[in-house]
Every structure is written in C-alpha cells, then in structure tokens.
Amino acid sequence: MNKKQQELLDKCVRVNVNDDIPLLDGILIIQQRRLHDSGYRMMYVIGQTFEDDKYYLLSTYSDVIDIGNMFSNPAHYDVHLDINSNGIIRIWSNGKKFKSTFRVSSCCFDVF
Image (cartoon, rainbow, N blue to C red):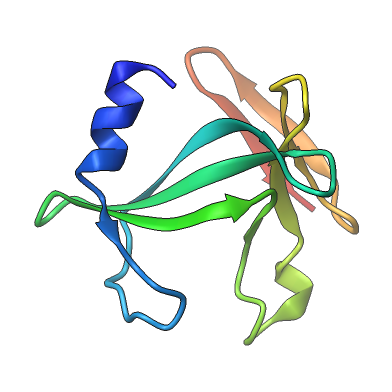
C-alpha cells in the first residue's frame, strides 16, 4: 500500500454493518494483497460524501462489489466488480451485456 492510500484509510470513519451512513457521492476501492477464500483479492471499500468531505470505511473483507438495488429490483442487481489475484479489475454481469458506446477521454458503456 502506498502512502496516499494509507492516508486515505487513516482518515476514514470506521462503520459497522448495522450503522446508518449517509447517501454516498462516490465509492473508492483500494485493492489488498490478501486473497479471499475465493481466490480473488480483498478490497477496502470506501464511501465518500462531498458535502462534508467524509470518508467511510465500508468493508475490509469484500472480494466482490455488487451494484444495484437488490431489495427493490433484483433483476437490476447484476453488475459486479472484483479483482483477480494478478490485480486485474473485472466488471461483469451474469445476465446482462455491455455495449461500448464512447471511447475517448472517457470509456462509456450501456448495459442491456
């Protein structure tokens, strides 16, 4: 871990699973060297709020990040992110496809 990553972790508010946290403006991910039982890298998952410039350490043991609302619409809960043992980040879906729509300074995808 480099110095800037450690500084970010040091200023994070530590939260427990049942703690109520505010809506987040961003999500930051720092890969760990440790591997989860699945063989994928564990991640520090950090939530950020812009208004009060706070960082929340959400997870230190996750090997997958799932994006969507699994409670209100499980069909939309099918975009995932992980990091393999070689440090390669992967975003995938079990039931959806990604279409590359724009590739210049931003690389954009639609999800179908």
